[in-house]
Amino acid sequence: MSTVSKPVPHKFLEARIVSQRYSYSGNSVKSHFFLPYTNATTGRRSSSRREILLIYRGPIGGAAVPERKPLSVVHMASSNVDNKDDRISRISSSIRVIPDFPKPGIMFQDITTLLLDPKAFKDTIDLFVERYKDKNINVVAGVEARGFIFGPPIALAIGAKFVPMRKPKKLPGEVISEEYSLEYGTDKIEMHVGAVQPGERAVVVDDLIATGGTLTAAINLLERVGVEVVECACVIELPELKGRDRLGEKQLFVLVSST
Ligand SMILES: O=P(O)(O)OC[C@H]1O[C@H](OP(=O)(O)OP(=O)(O)O)[C@H](O)[C@@H]1O
Ligand SMILES: Nc1ncnc2[nH]cnc12
Image (tube, rainbow, N blue to C red; front, side, top):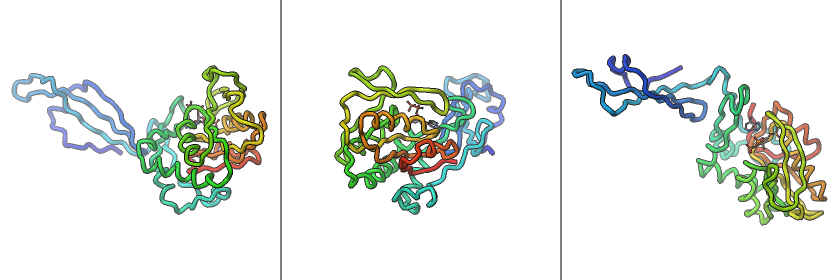
């Protein structure tokens, strides 16, 4: 379905489009067409341009945008978030889905739009802080890159240290590393030797769990040096990729589920 925001005079329908750009909002795509502005009497073009906006809603790029739901009570079995909590639906609706990024077939869950909404961002952090503040957590480990956005404010609020788990060759000191497979490739994460101590209690934070490869690698790194990983925490779960199964007995706390 498409709607034209303003009636388009006939003379502009005959004009050539000089440029076009797209912007995304929720499950809709806006196409901005720029037409040369032509004087109907003289036929001369002005340097100014006229913008025509088309708004498409629904399927984009041939693939249907999946519905993202606040987590159902069944999925929340291991969490204490009230499913009726209106913070969850605000968080869910602030996350945008970009089809075919970074390659065809991937429905990319883009949390940068959540970050643009200060209330949704604060609600996200608050929900994690409410869950971990009384659990004697010493370590919040965040996985590069998006775990670096959510992890540090949680760590500060609960009085824990933040430990970055970085992509290879980024950390300057001695590291231990762990390889893992992704929904779209393979990768490796590294942690500084000495950043954590045996017996410390950790939560691993990331924006999203897909296949669970990243979180499994993070858990392995921490457990190799004697840290107790209490739980993993993500904003989004893609349940179809069964990452939760890959974590085995390890608890996973998520806020929204995307089907
Ligand atoms: O459950 P998995 O299948 O392991 O996938 C989840 C991981 O994939 C994404 O990161 P990505 O590797 O794309 O890195 P980036 O955050 O640096 O873009 C996401 O932020 C998670 O870290
Ligand atoms: N579909 C997805 N959206 C965002 N990040 C991801 N990481 C792995 N799969 C992803």
